[in-house]
Image (cartoon, rainbow, N blue to C red; front, top):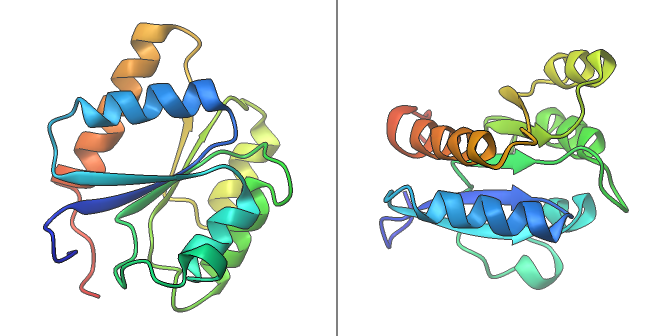
Length: 147
């Protein structure tokens, strides 16, 4: 766990409205978490590999990555594929947080090693509850393997 006792979550979301709402709801969970947000898949890979502006980020990996699928530069499927193929990163849980209900997306993500697949509800209350549930599970309930 990070030295400041906050569990790190990485949010990879290009839609500023969805990101803002997700950050707000996670912040209201009352959990010891710190959330970093990146806006596309290329930035997510830089973050996870500690490249570019992320070379000095903390050594600890996030407890979970909340990953959108449809993004510019590098899409979520490509990020998932690369992370799960890397033995140094593959144990990081990745939950797909997307608006896609396409069966091919769902199947491909699980085939590549996604740890969960959550379709963003259109309804605000349902979206709020889904985000709170995600935060509570990954930050308070789930046990990760030792680093």
